[in-house]
Image (tube, rainbow, N blue to C red):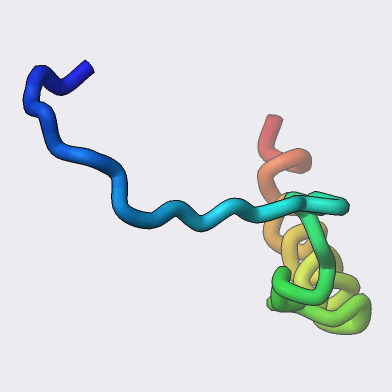
Length: 54
């Protein structure tokens, strides 16, 4: 606590009715399903030679 004698002049009170931390409205989609499929195909192509060399 502060030890000064100042008085509080104003206060703002908020009533929160709901809270959704992971609200999809504010989370941008970086990759579409099609983009992910293309990347997974490319990853599989790159991993194939690694599996053959073992």
